[in-house]
Amino acid sequence: MKESINYACGSELIGNGPQEPTPFLIGCNGRGVQRSSLRSPISLQELPISEQFRLVSESGVFDYFDRIPLRSNIDEYRAAIEKYNLPVRSASWFYRLGEDDALLTDNLRVCKEIGASCHNIMTFTHHKDGHVLSDQEIIDHYLGTYDAGMALDVEPSFELHVNMWTEDFLRVAPIAKAVQERGVPFNFTLDYSHVNFKINQPAELERSHVLDEVERGEIILDPFEADSLCEQWLSMNIVKWTQLRTVAPNQPANLWHRNEDGTLARGIQYPIAKPGPGEWHSDWNAYLLEPSKEAIRRVLRYHVTHPESPLQYITTEMINLPDYGLGAKYDLFEQNVEAARFIRAAWRETLALHAAGLIQAKSR
Image (cartoon, rainbow, N blue to C red; front, side, top):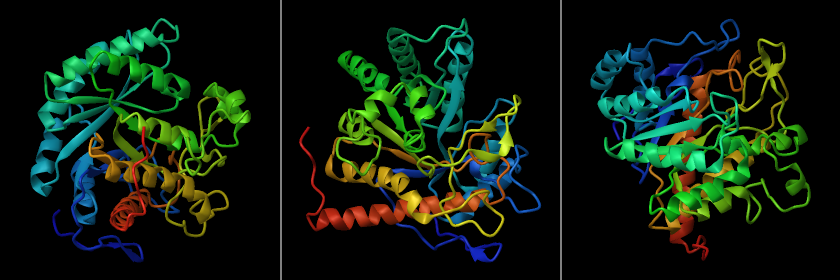
């Protein structure tokens, strides 16, 4: 890790000094490298790419920048990578089958060209023609993408995400197992915010087709409990990448943004650092962050006790899109820095507990 540069952010300093290396890389999602204030809420108008790289580099808590360039700005990325000695190691995009096949192929090439070794993939539930993707279609999609990516030394990873096939939580395990039975590793991006925010939200649980199972206790969402979905997915040894976006169970919608139809955007982001007066639209309580933090602790505990763990990337995901932080008045980048600080502190704690014999691997 490079030595950090402390710099002022309002009344606080963000840089924390040199950071110890970890056995995984910590990246910052580029959509979260945005500043805000009460007078200038978070918008889709983003900072220049070079400024984004500067902020991430000078914070001293990140190993890399996480975002895929467009063909139109890839040269700006290359210049920023060189100027700030800050690589791009992972990149994400979303795809609709039957419509974005060529885009996916080209984005794998873009990843290769920019130096990213993993491409995070969000695939919509519905095909271009409107039908819900079958399990076999998703399996074939994964296998084809895996072959194309590995030919370029770019691993694909399929993300747990709303509006994608993975929002139907019960599809993940059988599809992953079907891929593994073909002798191919199933790489999974675990963003547990997309589970935690649904806790105690019946309408959201219906969208994941698990309301009845949750009410009967057959499916457990809370990562503090044994045999939660978080623990089940980790036990499959599929988590290549995990993401930290803090949410609160049954949190409010994003009251600062309405969709085109007038409905409020979904609420899938809750500040990890306490907002100042007027910076958050609702009551804020630190204890509501704990399920998000526990999901990360679970990932780290699994990683320290399983040498075969595939985990390579952890990204902070406090971002500026409608269902997340668009319109917010808290400082988005400061939230991502705080998230990275938490990850590093949680890893140090995990190592200490493991050394003391207080964390042991569970038999699978």
